[in-house]
Image (cartoon, rainbow over all chains, first blue to last red; front, side, top):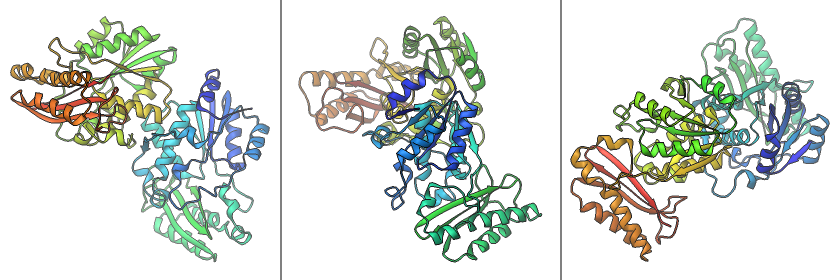
Length: 276
Length: 276
């Protein structure tokens, strides 16, 4: 496994490889990331992982400075998984003085996370476009856990005719249903014990849909009610939206995205399921 | 020469080529375009030209509907010049329903043309990024005549780490100094006779700089005075700016951009020279 810190090193290493699968990450890797790594390895001639805590996707007051990091552990996990290239740039390598461009993907970035995290998705789209241009993968892998991020990147890749396939891996969950997230480390024991209610709320609404319920507002109320049953959790939003545009729907149907965000103490978690 | 109308056709044709030079154009080709084509042919293993009158870079009230077109003549010129690929998409191929992404390059797009043509440079940057991703050139060629467009594309290519070289060709001029432009066809005989004053103004200011004048405001006043000496021309702006950031300077130096825009009847022309 080669660990590369500069864009020039990546371009040189990339030149000799035909197909390449890229898994962009912010590090502090968990089983969700590693499932994407395994797919990239299985589906592509070579595999690359980027580890970069991208400052431009954190809004003021968010957790950039305390975002969890453990580079030695990350590199050991990726080495054991048989990854070929790891790109771990410093912020100044990605954003040298004078950097000013950004990619705006339009309406799909506006609701939900986009409404609560100003500039977040322009930061995500821009850094992902840069990583695509640096690494030039034939396939790029993202987790369904960040559903709106997936919608934003799909929109960007399609709109800008990027020469690669965007591949989305299923959310990986703890045995009690909590979606894997690097931010789970922030949770106190009590918060960790309460956190699985997010998935319980989503799963109950999905089962209600499977049982015939089609009224989106009924599903939203049911999810909000489940969250409210657990003390110490502040609901941020619940949503039943079109899976591609993320516009709220009146009537739920296959492909719709059920999603929610909630705060447990200082920690903000998100989760989602797709109706099908 | 292969004339391709769809993105899929371009991707298939591109696959077999190692190095490729791309000249993006809006058609109605003139000697300025053809000088870029000649360089692309000389410097790259294969050459491609795109012809696409990009609607998103025209502001409301501009000349999109009457922009001059002559596809048979353009194709004959490119065939005679030995071009390998020509990409002539319909607008719906480039902007299918749902397209929403755009690239903003920041401050360099704000003054001069950017201040007078709202959205122009986001339209330019976005379509050029798409053409880069579709054609995947190793080098892309632009004319210095559109100096701010050059600065915008350089900024975008650098900021987004696009894997190609941006090459800039000198402005090609008529014998009387008028910069070649597809829009020159709009000029009445009287306007055409007056139009060389744009370059005379720039050239006089450059000679003043070469003679030792360093005060930018003096150079601006001299250019404006030269334009004012020609009846029937309405000056839009004169500028003495940093060649990379396009910020107006107080003191002129090598690398500074002298630029201006003026209206002759309904036709708006721009021109520039670089101090050196």
